[in-house]
Image (cartoon, rainbow, N blue to C red; front, side, top):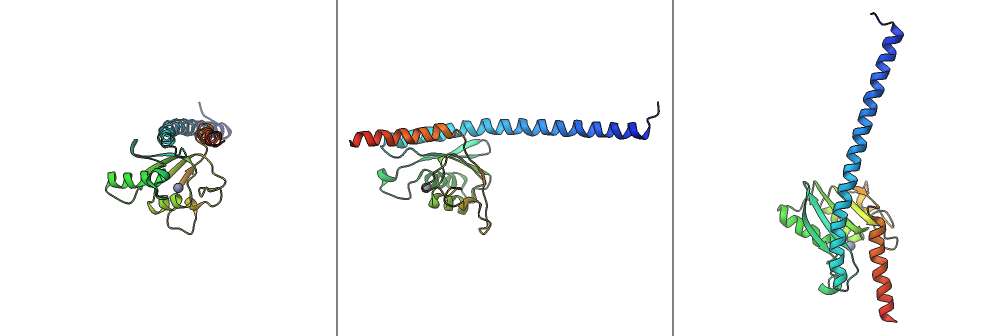
Length: 187
Ligand SMILES: [Zn+2]
């Protein structure tokens, strides 16, 4: 059977569409897998935040993932350590660098329950972290998109891939519940 020009054209079109659909499905599957992983690691960051809360600290937690496993954890200990450097992200970055034996954290994904401040966003850029996944935003102090977006400034030599709003509700509830309790205890 010989195909006409028109039939050949239609056949090509059909194959092209099929290929596009298959690629789209693969992309969606990949994205769904990534979302699931992001939630899994954000839950770990939330667990770190609970450790902060147990110390009476603002509950903020962080984990750093490299090649599919957690290599460092951190939680807010600012009051306990009496140090402004004791933010969850800085602690996790320090530990990750120690673990990898390198100040460069290329290939690492940092998960944090609250949008990073200017210090932590700066440290993330300095450490060349590849990707940051954040829970809820911090409109009053956040520098991952709220006040500034230090993580993605073209003027710097490194930009971070950013994903926002992973388990946002849980991350934000954890914080509001903490502040509510604090207010009540002060009355
Ligand atoms: Zn910070």
